Image (cartoon, one colour):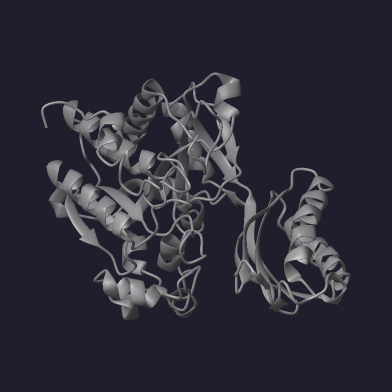
Length: 418
């Protein structure tokens, strides 16, 4: 390539992909048509950089620059995801992928020495928007999520992950923990748009992550009695949607009682969902986060107790099922400190959002960079990035990669599990 690509130019090529005219923003669900187009874009961009592309057993795409002698061992890996939440912003995920590609260009332009292999990876279903399992691809790879559980996950239309994989040309019988892929990773560094106001308040374009707070997803099922909206008197109703409305408010109130807790109801699904029908049951998805895992689970227990009482007052019952949970993660201290040496101006921030890097942190040395979001808003069409910050993020990532590629970082980082 004649000159390094700009991050915003790379992103402009996919600006129309998955645009959601109803919700606003983008709905880029894993193994959808939009996802296929995004994956094709990434493969084409990797080919332009003479990177060798492969799709692993769990559907992640790897773009490789082999090390000395064609080795793929002890690789420096970067990348992120391309899927989105419903009606999400255009930078959550794709910014990290585009920045990784731009960083490769910067390294090539300066003639950087590659003493180790380099890979850019794209994980699937990071958001969990289609199959309800956040970081599904990376969790399958590490064995944190079993193949049986994952393959039986279904989207809102009843399509299973196994079916979706088959339709995308990926053999569902091969998904699961991938020790070969994990064994190649010497260090993983994920760049992500910041999902908060830390960098705004500090006046800095790039930060280094210290940790990710624990978070989980639960499903409350409120069961009442389905009936006719016109023929059923108000005093004769057992309406689970009324109970669900009360539960939304009590979730907020319960979280406010616990310092540093976050609890959200982001999705409610009445069944059968007719406009002239009293629902028979309502599914309520609950997201709870706290730096202390015990506090997070105690908060969920409190919410369940109050939800049962609220439902009982409407003649309804409530059950709870855990969809997923990720404990608080502290990134590799040796690798984090190395990034801080390379980027001395970058502040250290914790993340309230989950990432594939947090999953990989349990098994390989892992770090993260954040690029400033001038709105502080994410998972929304109002998520933004300034061009100068995007380029600063790619440049910072290139500096980090250059440092790691020049020497043995993996063994040193792995020696300090703190």
